[in-house]
Length: 153
Image (cartoon, rainbow, N blue to C red; front, side, top):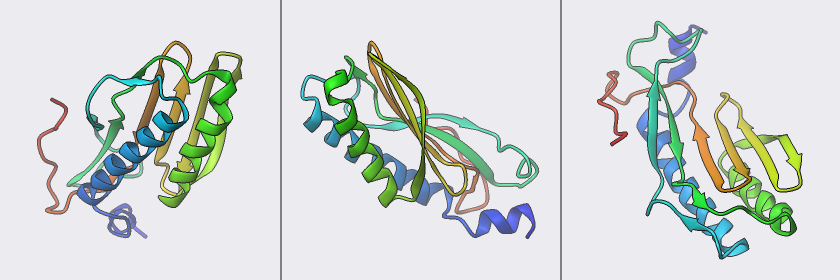
């Protein structure tokens, strides 16, 4: 398959964006149920960055990758709640095709995991002083074949 054919077999950029934003909102709700003291910085998740695709997709016209953030939360997930919080996020991620769990940091007061999907899309949950939750999206084609202006405002 050519790089463009590979991208055509994936959801469109716009379809994936809707799914990732909804998934992040679901994860925020689940994390808030586990740790009610978390205070989210923004009302809703958003696209926070747009980037050119990496090889082998760099020359595919109408393709982009994006990062989506949950709005992050003031405050950490306490160690006593970490395993329940991690499980809540990984369960939701699995329903959306993110199935490979990597524990990047596992120290008291400092935890980071990645949950990776089949195209390299990644959910990352981290907590230390504050809590971060992001989706690093894969390279995807736009519905109309043309990248749109970034919605990072």
